[in-house]
Image (tube, rainbow, N blue to C red; front, side):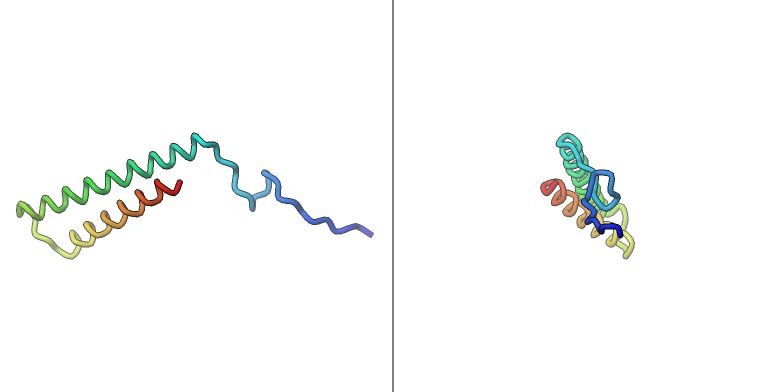
Amino acid sequence: MEEKRSRAKTPHDPATPPAQSASELKGAALYLRWLGMLCTVMALFCLGVFAIGYKEPSFGRIATLIALIVASAACLRLSRRT
């Protein structure tokens, strides 16, 4: 009769995420910070377009502005956690 063995998680086990090096984590944080700043600049540009009257605010433009603000906050928060 075979013994039942408890299966230990190994690096090759698909249930275990691969180990990340410190440089990969630093790169991810840098990328998220850059992406958050890009979203901030695009949101400010959108506000500038509304402020000078080049385009009138519409539902789609306001939704885009809100999405950029939320994405900027999320990316900058994630960059600090990584």
